[in-house]
Length: 169
Image (cartoon, rainbow, N blue to C red):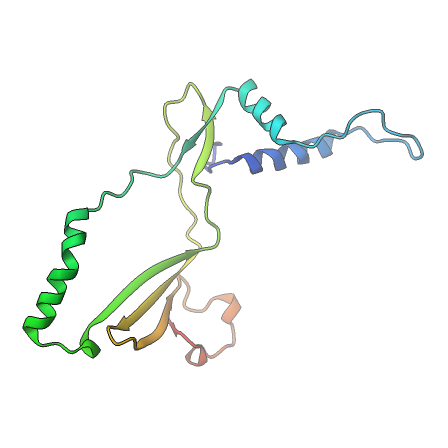
């Protein structure tokens, strides 16, 4: 983790090493072959770097979700019983799902010093769209819903959101 509390993965370390190398690389004279090997920031270099600076790779996410598996297994039968008792038709039984789409997702692992006990927390990016999906037991699907933090994002400027193939909020 760095001072901004952003997780760092191996690819990020390798890219940064290459950019630092490019800044300090001595210029070669034209027509003269370079007698030095070109730095590549290979996987071997990364392993040596991690060992040299005593870094370990740790998980940055919080506690694993602990679902009640027994209740989840019993639920389909309970739902079937409720539907039969109340006399609902398959057309009246809907299921909705909410899914987040993240396009600036942070890595779930980072490197920290082996002397540190755990990785400090970080503030995740808020760039995401929430998709709302709904359908009934017969298979009829309702128009997809999209929720975004901005009512009028730059990409939709001047567009009629009522003509989109989704419900936009």
